Image 1: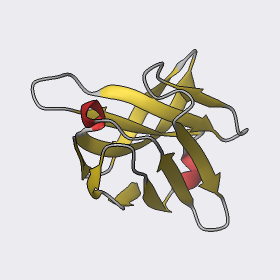
Image 2: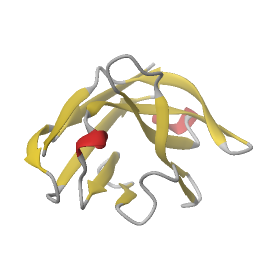
Image 3: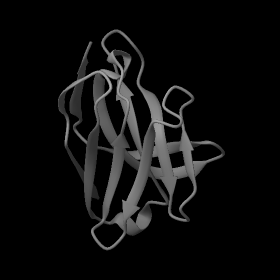
Length: 120
C-alpha cells in the first residue's frame, strides 16, 4: 500500500504562484511514475503533470511553461510549482502514483486532493 498526502493548496490571485507537495509513504518502490491531476467543478479529472522514476516529465498543454513538476527522492516527495496562475486553474489537485504507460499514468493510488482557487 502507498499513502499520498497533498499540501500547499489555497487561494491566490491571478498571476500568483503556489507550490503543491505530495508526500508518499509505504511501498513506493512499486511506483515508476508520479503525477498531479486536477478536477474542476463539472469537468473530468485531467492529468496536469507527470514525472517518471527516470526523471522524464510530461505536461498538459494548458500548463506547459507555467507549471513545473519535480521530485525529491530522499524525501519521497513530489512537487508542483505553479506560476502565472489563471482563474481557469481553479480545481482540486490530486497527487497520483502508478505506472507510466505510453504518455500517461496508470494510477494505482490517489491522494485526497487539495483545493487551489485562483481569483481574478
